[in-house]
Length: 350
Image 1: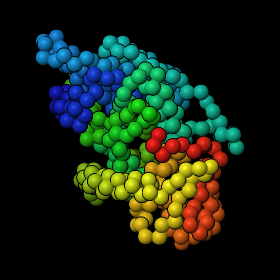
Image 2: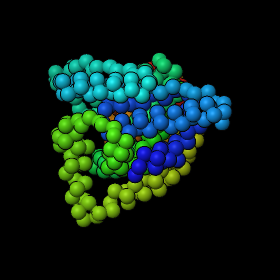
Image 3: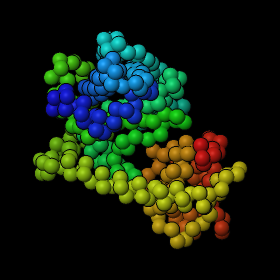
Image 4: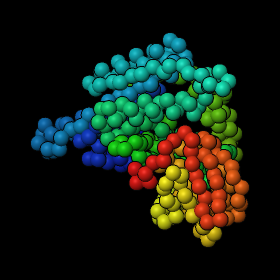
C-alpha cells in the first residue's frame, strides 16, 4: 500500500467532508499506527485547504490537534516518545497537548495501577477532557484490523456475548458532544509501516509491546502465530465475522433500546419490570445500554454476570446480590431495583 492508497482507504472509511470543518483530536503515542493516522488526517486536511485556494470549496476548515499521554512507565524512553510526538506536531504545523501520568496505587493493597485497563482508562480520560476543552467534535485513534482480531479473541476468552464478539466499534459517543472514531480499522498493521516507510516517516517502537505479561500482547505474540500456522486466513476470516456480527448487534441494540424505554423507571433507584417473555439477548443488551448511561463499570461485567442478571429480570431468581462496582440487585415479585452506592442515577436520555 502506498500513501495515496492509504489516504483513499481513510477517506472511504471516514468521508472527508464529515470532519474537516470541525475539530479533531488525534491520539498519538508515537508508534507506527498512530503516526500514520496523524500524517494521513493532516494530509487529507491539507488537500481540502488546497481546494479552497483554487476556489473549489468554500467550507470552513476545522483544526487537528495531536494528543499524547505519557504513561511514564519506561523512564527516558517514554519521555523520548513524548518529545517525538511534539516535534512531529510542530513539523506538521498543528498544536499538541501532552500530559504525564501520575503514579497511583490501589488503596486496598498498595499495588501500582499499571494493569491494561487502568492505563487505557487514564488515556481515554485524557482524550475526553482535552477534546471537550478544545471543542473538538472527534477523537481519532489508530486501532487497526489486527487490533480488532486481537480484541475479538480477548473477548471470546472472557466469555463475552454478541457485543464483544462484534469487535472494536468503528465509532461511538465519547461524552456529551464528542465522538470517538477509529479510521484505520480496515487496514493491516504491516501496511501502515509500509506507508510510513514510503514517505520517509519514522516512528517510535515501544518495547513493552513485546512483553507477554499483558494479555493482549500474549494473544498477539503467542496465540495468533499458532492459529495462523493452522489457519493462514484466520485474521481476515475473523474480520468478516465481526462485520456480520455488527449487523446483528445493531438490530438487537435497537430492540434493546425500545425495551429499555418500556420497562425501566427512574427514582431513588432504577426500577426494572420483571419480563418473562423477552429473549435474553435483548434484555442483556438493554442492561448493557443502561450500564453505559449510568457510567457503571461495564468492563468488569462478564457474561456470567449478565446471565445472572437476566435470570433475575426474567423472574427465574429472587435472591439479592451485588454486581461489580457495588451495584445492588434487589428483586421483588413485580420488579428489580438496581442501585449504585458510587454513582448518582443519570437520566436515560443523557
